[in-house]
Length: 400
Image 1 (tube, rainbow, N blue to C red):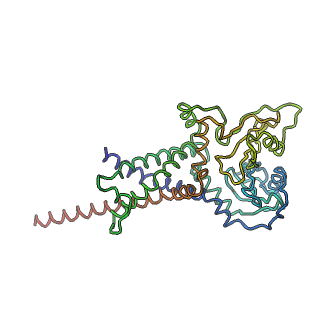
Image 2: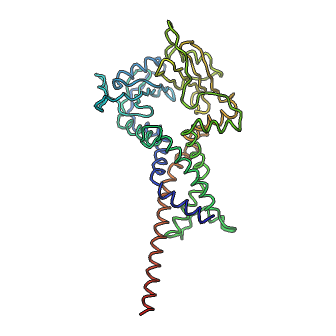
């Protein structure tokens, strides 16, 4: 059994090393995205300390004025701290039959491909000044697509990422079995000895890094599978834990348009959500912008500085002007709490800065595993060939 596990662990790692490496490195980049933006985003003149931010609709309109023609606003993300920058994300404009994009509005900068979905415009919610970071947005948008679907646009790309998450989980488990030390060798199994050279050095580094990072590596891998296959994971969790029906992930429930009634705008929906907030002290974190008349508006409220697991999500029917669903982590059924933690755990949120750093470092492990695993295989292969050549030479000499 151990020989079979070693064979599978080696060759699955060698064959799938490149896509697993890409997922790991892109994941690390996305975890530290706020720091990347802080470094590369140009500074804007500070707004007066007592200045009130504009309404969500005004910020969205200002962002739409510089977005590509045909791009539809999809979501609003409030500043994470007072004086920060808001983000409006757009669905990418449809391409023309000839393959080109629609023309851009005149009189403003052209934002390049941003995060998900499509295009992001960063804007000061007080002055409505646009913060232009086209190169960074294009890069982060590409990284989002690489990590989310390996740059494959249809559902098969997301499924492929989910299956790679299953493989990463299996590699972690089999790696633990293969690493398991013999009696009396436990201490050496957690370190890389100074005297280690060649294949021994790579083996010890491979095992030590794997065992120290295994717990977080497995958490990130399993939660990645849950994000790729939310319905399947929710069904599995619901089979063993009590779970209330609710829309999954970023989806919003369907609503019924009403004749002769104007739907509530995003500002009114935010006001309705704030009035129905299940806890005091919550502030706007973000809101979705309906893409069709039968979609509810998702409003996310959270304590200032709070992580995603502490956020409360309210689904507002813009036609009935009422909240139709509330996701409050403090009152959810056990199964809903489990599924609700999947994305925050995967993205390094909810357990403090140390956990976030560990998640970022776990994304580097596939690269380390690929290098050390390939080096072990190559060195052993070279040594076997050299040994076979020496044996052949000895036999040749004896025959003569």
